[in-house]
Length: 528
Image (cartoon, rainbow, N blue to C red):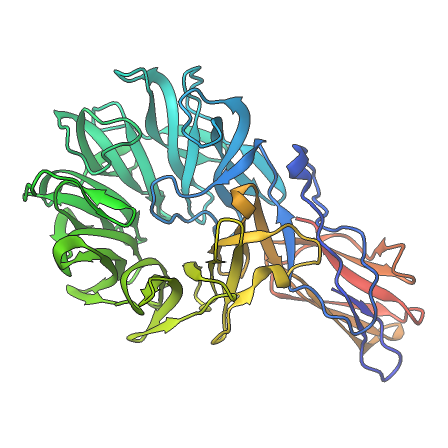
């Protein structure tokens, strides 16, 4: 936003905010300063300002962005504003892990710099990596191919951690593959690893080739891979870990089932699988809602667990909340199916649930009540992330070409994020994450790009007495940790920096200036 200096005794006028330009990283360029600013639109005093500035996170050479390799919603944006995930490269992939048959690599975007996180070792038959989770220390976990092939000449994958751009092989339990799903701020990571005991019936049946040995829920702590055990069956995997070291996941039980393939929507299983909580070496079955399948997805620091479980006859599943041994069916909006996908520290749960028509609706479950968040005039919606301010993001859609990212806050209604960004910005199709600073990670249409939305800085001008006489005070509402430049102009065409650039330490910064010529305009530019 830019502001005009007030005349003596007047209130400041307000003009339209500048539009955010495409990140230089999108062109494969690393800059010491990333000017997230484009040419000014013609603006008049009193025009509305975009609420967010948009940064295109760029490309590693290919067309697509990838988010959730495991099928469980991941944390791809941390509270420092660093984003991760996977992006296509320009290299062809003979195994076609991705639909466009280009290999993709994990990436890290931070403060205007896009980094290709690479793989463990180059393997001509498979050169792939994907990030699953980022903590607030910018430690990232995921999976990478390494220089080995399986019995069908397929590439093999290992759990990895990236810290400061360096990749570390987290290892296995003796087998030839592993996968890291989540990491807490203590650097403890969880996922699964194969051991050396022969097994043909694993939870991940076709990943993307069958395993030959047992898939076991695994904790990686201080360089050691720890088998967390199971609920009586041969296999399990871990989906999340909180700051207290409590771990959740999914495990086969001792029940064998009927040997046939069961499917509920996009989930399928051959034998019963239950949700578990692992704590201090003990593993607990979270129970069931009448069915034989469960998938816990998130645990917060209060030990509350969410996910979805099948009902009797395993024809559908409902979102659940487990807390201190008590299991609650969160229900739906009259339809058969729903799933809980994210939760904050207050126990507010978001996800998607079906109406009686089986159309999906994003929901917020709070204090025992499930609230329908609506749509953007479309058929379906679902929520993917929520922060402590109950700001919720997700997607509203009708068909494959009509996806719109949304923001829901302050009791609603749902807002189209495309209406809250500068005119002419790329289409925002899905809200993938929101952090405590209110920054939002979005996917573009068909997941062809990834974007970071940064709340636009606000500038307020008022008259002030300075040591040199009457002047002005410029109060700037900013995001701690972001880097800014305050600039001035007399004609909205030529801009001059006022003082040095600064990194905001608090959410409000005030700068006092001596009297300036009338008609002076000011703007605050996010540099990175």
